[in-house]
Length: 132
Image (tube, rainbow, N blue to C red; front, side, top):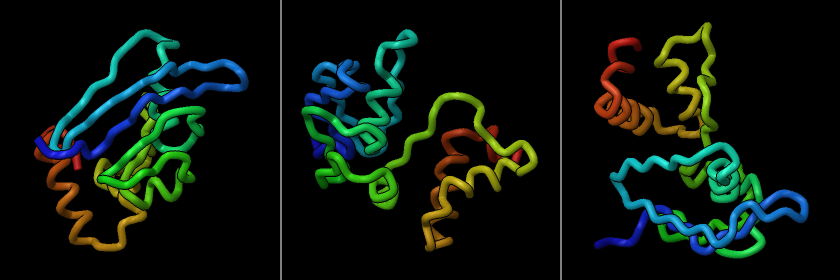
């Protein structure tokens, strides 16, 4: 099997002196859809905030597409193609589905790549294609 697209290894992170993550590891391979579920307070958001650089891990490392992104600023992580979207229905209600999806691609200058990404999203979630 190939190397994972995203690998988090032994993450320890938290807020103030309180550790929320105690050695969390995760691997996601190219083409996979992964769901992380758990009760409130289990550390799901903390894990993803750490992965994308919103929180700095006390221990562990994060690799994305073969590059160590541990501790990188969130804007630099985003430029590499990794984004964090918190739970909830956070959309711009005055905008169309297409316009909302395009907001997620604002950093990509190649419009052809944006169009290809949108087609992949529509293939995964046909209801979005219907509501463009």
